[in-house]
Length: 98
Image (cartoon, rainbow, N blue to C red; front, side):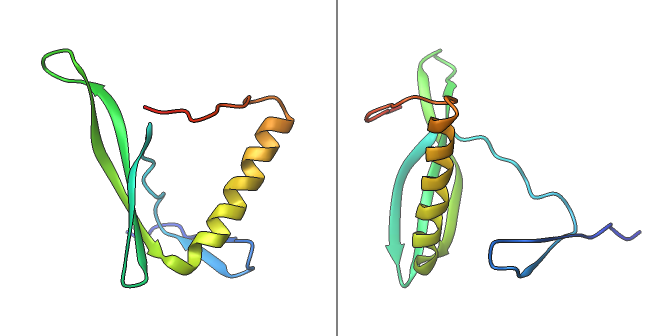
């Protein structure tokens, strides 16, 4: 059995192959970021109700990438944020915390 290959192009016009859909993981926030040896790791968490019905956080994703990717990520998130503000999809949320 062979998987259908989906080929798209990113902002750098490099071909991107996707044999299977990448997993989608919902996150509620970021716990922290570390940088070691040219690699950053971003800990992402979900909020859930524990057995004692107390609200808790658990790390569900640790995203790792080269430090050199940060400026591009910052620019992409900045553009997305401005677009969402312009369309009224989101308002200003100073220091939102979980």
